[in-house]
Image (tube, rainbow, N blue to C red):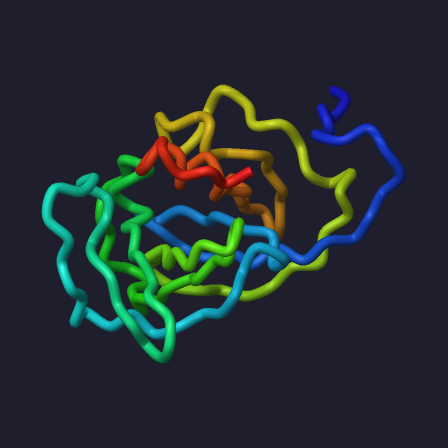
Length: 159
């Protein structure tokens, strides 16, 4: 069986941050990350927003909108691996923090190792999964944070 690679080009090396949410392993391209912060439960709630938006925080001189990744991916809360963290992205200059269960580490991956998502995924939000890699006998689903942001707020232009 031949792998169905997501890209048909010369292999490039990228870095993928692995994190846990709802008992599953996910990844994001390191280039989309602004910083990683400990999760601060002291959020300012925003009325009349999407149910996945937990609120906003201002850790320094900028405001971060916090999205609960477990909620938006329709996952079940799992107590194992809990060390709540925020992965703050700066996609299209938007400061959005994704509340995850824990951050595991960074993997160097060749783009040819990323395969297209199959039918058996951890979430019913299929547009959220950009590809899949395998590390140490486990699958890591690479998330498309742009599609997740558009799921939460379709008016936002994330180009």
